[in-house]
Amino acid sequence: MHPLRLRASGALLALLVLAACADPPSGPVATSSGRPSASTGPSASAAASQGATPAADRGSARMYTVVGGDTLFAIATGHATTVEQLQAWNADRYPSLVSDPNGLEPGWELIVSGDPSVTPQPTARPSAPQPTSPPSAAACRAGNRVAAGGEQTFYAVPNAGHNVALTFDMGGRLDPALAIMAFLVDNHVCATLFPTGAMSQTPTGEQVLAVVRAHPELFEIGNHTMHHCDLVSGGAGSPTTAPCAGGPPTADFIRSELTDSAAILRAGSGQDPKPYWRPPYGSVNQAVLDAAASVGYTKTFMWDIDTIDWKPLADGGPTAEQIGSKVITQAQDGSTVLMHIGGYETLDALRIMVPGLRERGFGLTSLSDLLN
Image (cartoon, rainbow, N blue to C red; front, side, top):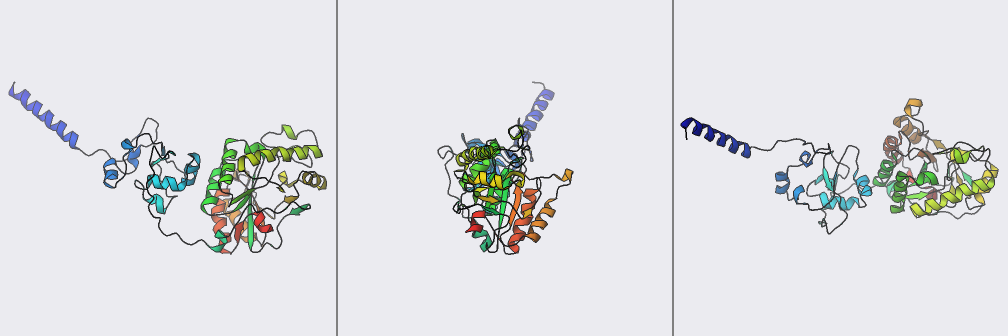
């Protein structure tokens, strides 16, 4: 071979060897889905040195890539597993999940398979000591319903002790509903929900009721009718106005609105909403109360603190800070706070409201607990 060609071949070989020995690039690597790959977390070599299972060795385990706004509870709910199981499957790779389950970072790839034979469950690492919940956080109860008895309408509940009921209507917008439910679970806040039958049949509504079913110690439901009609004047309604048209509803219509909704609520939540209900828009008169009582709904719940969280900022609605401040400053023993599971600023307001009420010594509990 010609000496010059030999020297060029040798140089090319040396370059190839150096390239093979070079460290892989760091930082996110784009995948065909457009999401960052697992390289946004620990590298495969680093993970192996920590005892983690590299992604290539996880067999047929289902994986999920964390995106902004995710919580571990929401991921667990969406993949039919539990927070504890997710921590156990992923603690080797992401140890902080044990001590800070909400400290997720976008790009993390979590094992979410619910089949132990696919991904054997390791022994969960002991969690770091958690601060003791204040008595007001630990003492709440839900589901201990009072008997139907005679007709009663409540704005606030008398003789309820130093407690407040947080209540959530579910009759329209549902965008933040699951995040709100996750916050309530994570912070051990008992609450009473008033869903309509129509919204309970939506995909998000079904998931909300599934959370209620999974946490009967925290959540109870009341009836908010089937179609959210104005039961005094007629009209209005959600998500369609059609069933509500035709003038003031008859007693038979009101009874059907409650019984049709109840069947859906029982199937989804595992709870019978009787005798609790809330009239849509707070629109009620004696004829409506009598019609509701005739099918078992004798406890009518209004409110003494209205957050107006259904109104967006663009239309002059309140900010999260305004909602939180209003509830904290106006709350009294036995207060009933009206919110919406799809409220525009409700989630951020809860982050202000819950610690603020607890700092005032209030227990945050259900309507049943106020009545007992």
